[in-house]
Image (cartoon, rainbow, N blue to C red; front, side, top):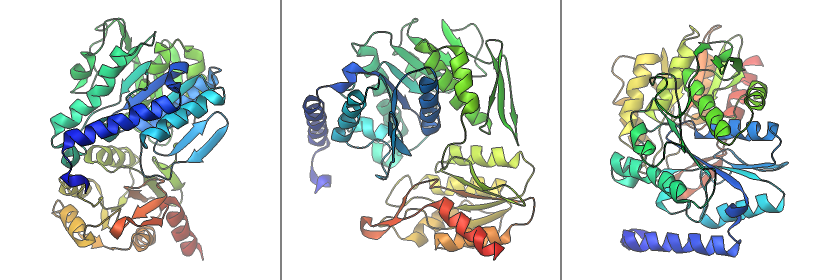
Length: 422
């Protein structure tokens, strides 16, 4: 039915619901310091790090991400398969934060949520951008429209009545300039590792950094050494984004350092289920950019990669399927293609699309994802790494008719390892 409704009417419908929700709950964002984190990849990790930083600094924090919802001491899993749930949920979440004495709320903000006005009538103090690479192209119509959707969060923040606002931008991203245009010299905060120093009024750039394959990330910032237990250069950026947001809100650099050094891994993000005698890693990577970064990080450990991957169905960014196959072809030693979230699309078609990008390596196709994980674990020798991508810690697999099947790649991997030990 929705496909026959003109887009402008749908837009007004979503905007009306958003206003009604904010009105019903009394515009709770006005009573909170609200931080919105958007970007193609890295949002969840950045939100998680920020939650730890503001908690360490003595704030009572609420945060909403694709993994979980936390309000003060209470935590519950995000089982909606929506990073940014509906308007009434967001306003209710913010109202709950106020009622439980929180003074900071951190929201993971998506382009789809922005397109449906879910960010409206939320007064943001901070809008932050992690990076922008192609995603949701079918849904938005083009990459340019996807980018414009992200920019609306920054435009709204620039117009917000809140004081002490900040626009936080990854200065190394090719699209950084689009986001910077919504900030003044005083409100713009830029982070990165490659942009020219002394370019911006507020900038956060380490004097040095290293990524140690077995140890995480080390960097020197403001003459302080940071050791962060997250792997890969992409996590240098996630950490810098969180640091910059916190500094923009006058959080002590020492509290930031303490929080980051005590932070553990993020569920379903380069999460090791086993390290020896061979590694088994689960990661959410479901875009070409994220997949390449995960493989690059694991490849740096000098191990052979056994890659279990697929792609989402339901007409969701089918352009990226052969691209992900191409990345696996160039970086994996063994490739096992399997189901991810087929929705109403034929699994054979999805896997054929991914397979179209693979020309050099032999491919094993195992439609049942549990069997595919088993095949990957079974094929591993000491010193190898099995990497299972696409779902991370998502609690469901969505199949034909929108049916949700309970799922957890981590539990499936543990089960496969138990079978090996028997």
